[in-house]
Image (cartoon, rainbow, N blue to C red; front, side, top):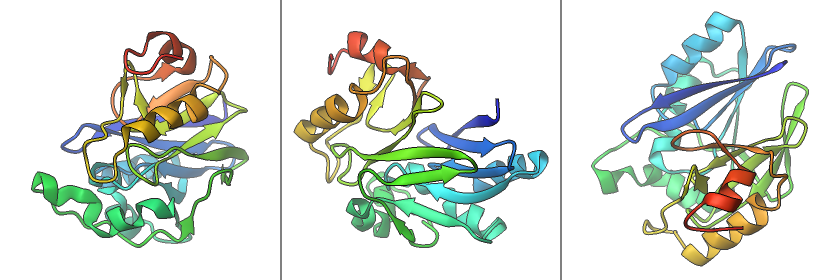
Length: 212
């Protein structure tokens, strides 16, 4: 395998941060640099990988809290990608003040995503799928070649993202899951923002909130 994924469970909300690398080119990106960016950078140094981008599924504080440190430690040629629907949330520090937390969100995203865009890490392409509901700008990142999808806080193992925070919308969340997740092949791995890995097939049949 030349696409390698390292998972870190970081921060006060036990958020999954994913370090994704093409081991043939040694290029890597971080999907949701949740917290403690130095831990993630330390891993890339140990593996001789270079982080070329930060991809945010959405802008809640527990998904962007490690970005500033990663940029400080490795700022060269770093692209930060996020949907513009979450810029207001990002500029408000990811809503951390609601939980008594204030973070440095780092530099403003310079790659504003749209549904259907393509992102790359080394030789691997990921389709951007806009999937609002948990936040207005939430996106999932799908790699058809590897049968995997980074689903952020849209859907989890036997769960779905909360919609009671500012910008949340249950109707949109349900629609997004049905259109952007349940239309993927059943064998597609789902790597979520919290909790263990699952699959499209498992959730379509067994998710108690939204069945396929």
